[in-house]
Length: 333
Image (cartoon, rainbow, N blue to C red; front, top):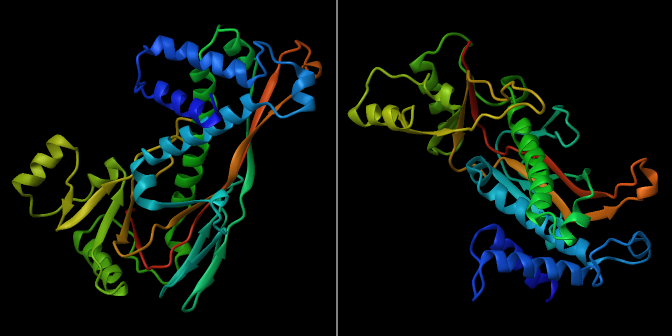
C-alpha cells in the first residue's frame, strides 16, 4: 500500500468513514500492517536503521499530523472568517500585499511575544513574514503501535492537538494584542461607560472610512450581551433565548469570538469589554504562514536513563495581524 493510500485510510478511520467490505476493527489491523510494512517489515524500531536511512513510517505520520491539524483549524469559525493561511510548500512566498487607506498593524506572536510594529503605508505595501520553528516531543508510542498495544490515533491526537492548540493560541494572541493605542488612524469613542450613540458613531466612522462598507461587530459572548439597545424586537428576544445574545444590533451583524484560556492557566485571553467593529470589505486580517511539511525525528534511547525512544515533530509557522483597512475597537470602561 502506497503512502497516500495509507494516509487516506487512516483519515477515514479517524473520521469513522471507512469504506469497503471490512469493519473498522479490520481497518485498524490493515493500518497496523501497513505501518509495519513502512517500517521495513518489522514490529520494532531499529535505531541503526533510523540513523542510516529515512523511514517511510515517519513520512506517513508527518503527512497525517499535517492533514489533521489543517482540518482541525478549518473547523474553527474564527479561523475560517478571520485568518488567511498560506503554506510555503505550495509555492507561495511569505509576502502579503496591502492596498489600503489606513495603517498597517503587524502583531507577531510566533515566539510567544505580543510586540506590535506599526508603520505608515501608501498605496501598496508588502509585508514579509518569516516562519519560526516549533516542536513537539513524545516517546515510546511508535513501538507500542507497531506491536499492536496502542492505537495510532493516540499518537496523532497528542501531537496534532498540541500543534493545533499552539497555532490557535498564536492567532488569538495576535488579535488580542491589538489595542486602540496601536491603530493610529482608526476612530475610537471616548473611553467610558457603554453608550449606544458612541458605538453607532464608531460604526459610522468605520463604514465611511471604507467606502460605505457594511460592518460587523466582533465580541465574546459575554461582551456581545453588553450590546444593548432601546429597541428590542421579538427576534432579538428569541436570539437571547437561543444564543445568549442578539445576533443583530441596530441592523449590524454580531459575531462571537470564542473565549480561550491563556496557555497553562484558567485566565481568559479576550477582554469582554472590547467590541471590534470590522468592515466587511476588509481582507482577512490575521495572516498565518506555514513553512513546508512537518518533520519527525527519532532521538537516541542511549541519551535517556530509562532507554525510552523519543520522537520530535518539528514544524514552522508564524502569525501576524496585517490590517489594510480602518476598523474600530470600542473599549468599554
